Image (cartoon, rainbow, N blue to C red; front, side, top):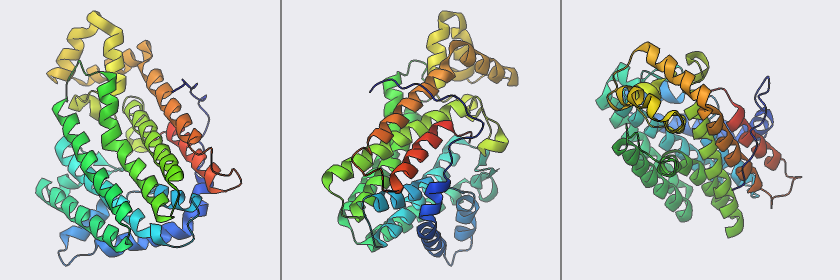
Length: 338
């Protein structure tokens, strides 16, 4: 992959207005499906699920399913149930992640496990996975069911791999990219590919849209990694520094550790390996990342993946309004602040 130059920081990130306008009728129908399938005679289930799902303003992953289907020529509503299933899979993984990571905030709200408890959060996550599979079956596409079922398995593998390599100061960049390709990018890839399949796309176009989704997901996660050291709680919807406090070996941290070398080795061992930290340590870590260019290098790599994602759409007609709208989404993934 060729190295791309990271875009200059603009006053505002690229707009998603065109994509959201194109998808508005479809996403209204997807939202209705989500609401209907959150329902349960057990009151805690819809209450807890709504606490998290209602905080998702953009619904990027189901939006990607709809956009991929329409770009590939879909004229019917076959993609809608798949899009709702994608949102349920994503929400279920967030509920489980927040319990594993002991997160305090999610999407600007108190994490569900702090309100309803960890057992309820895990079990409602399981409920949402089950609802996702019901929606997939209802969509009537065995290939799409296979894509999203495989994605659910790959995401779980990525989460377990990350857990087993947590606090690993010697984690390589290659292994870290393997982790985020599984835990984050796989659902983006599957969301886009499932949309293509629902539209009856050719194998070539199906592969192209999967590539778009995967590289978009990698860019998205890398920017998330950087924002944890450069954002703020109000815009992020979660506490900055969570990755540092949890001792997660994300790319900015890995690059900073390599670039500071022996001089700061004891600092990283104490704060990341032993998690013996003070508030001043997070400030120091941010300073080291700026000084070593670790944050800039992470964003450069994100821009490279975003450029690769846009290149994957080359065989779709530029006159198809969904193509530039998806290209804007790739730019947004790199330039966003939250």
